[in-house]
Structure formats: structure tokens, C-alpha cells
Image (cartoon, rainbow, N blue to C red; front, side):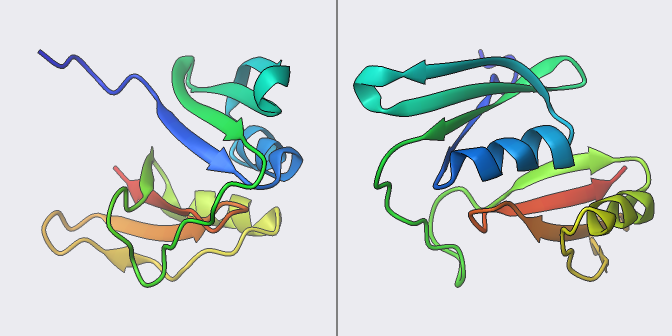
Length: 127
């Protein structure tokens, strides 16, 4: 039986920019960082609230992921927040653009989207 999501793996094109985005702007905690010489690749393990959540990889010459129009496969990552408006202000103050706030018609909850340095869609969902 499945117990939980163990982690999410993301391949980035600009490792320093993505490392800064996820660790400094989103404030995910760096657990460990490893450079794998044989693959010319970094692997950065990140945690949210003490829980291991994201593996950030860099690989040379990775193909771009089509996301707009939306491509098949993983659509986006969603982060739960208590105060959507406050989180939007925080992101905007760090130079991160967010879309307009929308309302989930099924739950009545507010949400918005923004993007990481590789234009991976990320969602903020107010609980």
C-alpha cells in the first residue's frame, strides 16, 4: 500500500538560479547537496517543514519541458498556504510574478499560480 509521496524530482536548466529560487525565495530547507562528477550533475535535497519533499537535479543539455499549452504528464506542483494574499505579497516583493487569485469552484478555496526559473508551473492553494 502507498503511504505518502516520498519526494518530487525536478530537473533544472540553471542550477544556481533554481537553488536560489527553491532555497531562498520559497525558503525550502537544504538537507544535502551532492555533485556527481560522473554525471556532471548536482542533486539538491530540499525539505518543507522538516519533511523531505524535492530533489533538484541539474543535467547538461536537458531538453525543455513544454508546459504552455499544457503538455501530457505532470501538470504542476501545489503548495498549501494559510494566507494566500500574504504569500503573494512575499513572492512579489522578491520579484516573483503571480497570476490573479482564482476560486476553486468545487471547494470554494482560493489559489494562484507562479513559475520557477524554468517556467515550471507552481500553485499556491489556501487551506
